[in-house]
Image (cartoon, rainbow over all chains, first blue to last red; front, side, top):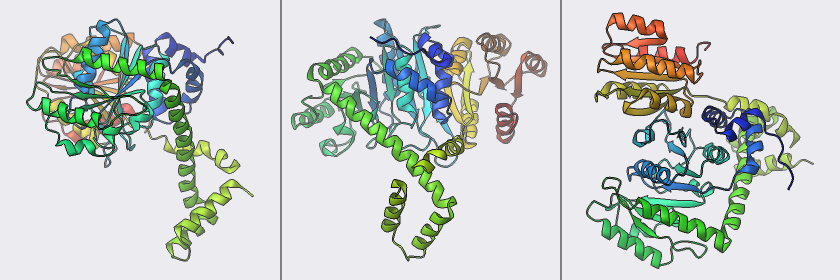
Amino acid sequence: MTRPAPLPPAARAIVRGDARALARAISAVENGDSSADPILRAIYPRTGKVPVVGLAGPLGVGKSSLVSALVGYLRGQGRSVGVVAVDPSSPFSGGSVLGDRIRLERAPGDERVFFRSMASRGAVGGVAAATREAARLLDAAGFDVVLVETVGSGQVDLAIRQIASTRVVVLVPHLGDEVQTLKAGLFEIADVFCVNKSDLPGAEIAQRDLAELVALGAGHDGWRPPIVATSTVTPSGIDRLWAAVEAHQRFLDSSGVRRTAERLRLKEEIVGRVRDELAAELADRLDRDPELRELLDRVVARTLDPRSAAERLLRSLRGP
Amino acid sequence: MARVARSRETLAAKRRTTPIRVLIAKPGLDGHDRGAKVVARALRDAGMEVIYAGLRQTPEEIVRAAVEEDVDLVGLSILSGAHMALFPKVLRLLKKESHPSIQVFAGGIIPDEDARRLKRMGVRAIFGPGASLEEIVRTAEKLARPSA
């Protein structure tokens, strides 16, 4: 074993459990502030050891209430929990109202829960650009479980796939007929199905439709997503929901899927990062660089097509 | 590729648009949150990220939320009359957690004499009934970004 490199002070504070240092690092990541870079680099080797559980599903299915219930359940078991809850930013003003905190209930003075609300800031896919690294910071801070709650835009909350090792897809009765369950997207990423608000009529039908979907071969890598009925009103099923999450976590280890899935996620992360940087850089240069402006001018004048312009740009990037 | 790498810093700087983050909370026991919601929405429309903590928050919960959410501002709304008991406690706890940069403003039914005392204690602005949303937004912007 090599001794880990000494941590920069901010990273040390986070690892020690300093909530303020953690909160500030998350802000730095959100704001694209370069002060986050050394922290993220330093903590990375310490991460990847705790379950990161994502909750995705349409608007109003009760994700925030479930998060609160799970926090209560896990605290009851003596486990600490870090939460990132994402809500949408306005495409008009850029502002947002982040309301997921309202449902959070915790014992006074309980510092073994950390809850962070995050605005999507223009990102699509149900999470913000900073969500993955915020989850990583919570992991490094020593929380036993990290929960990530998506925006709740429904069929497109798929970016959670790249962050969470177990994805809980939350649904409610009367969301649609069984054909909905055949549609591509959300249903394909589920490791656990949760039928919330199961105190309402129609819950059995929703469960039956999902059971049919699972029987038809939903799931991946040889895992069959269990279906759990929950209610945060009664409340009921929270223990079974967590048991299903843990069963999936055990499956990831016993099957070897954790390793391959993690490798795929990290590959996507690296590629995505390079793509985003290059795209921003190119967009900027097409406005500023006189040579490239001319290229764009020609496309606008229809003397050059976009595809050829893109090829020329790619060639110039790759160098001579 | 070298050119790409060189200009990365300037790009990062350009993208560093930092929305003002505000925690809106109702300390104490009254259940009238219309005002708090109206203000939350106005701040949202001004481009801020508003963390709405909701009703019946203790000063401890409010300060813990302010820390976790790393806010620039805390807005307290109160109609119960308990402001002289609750606001100083929020201020004291914020100071104890060493958050000199977090500014506190307030709204609700607060008599002038109390408002003067609260301002001396460190509440930066107090809005009563009839305060305009423009005024609240402008004040919040100024408190969060004094140099801007």
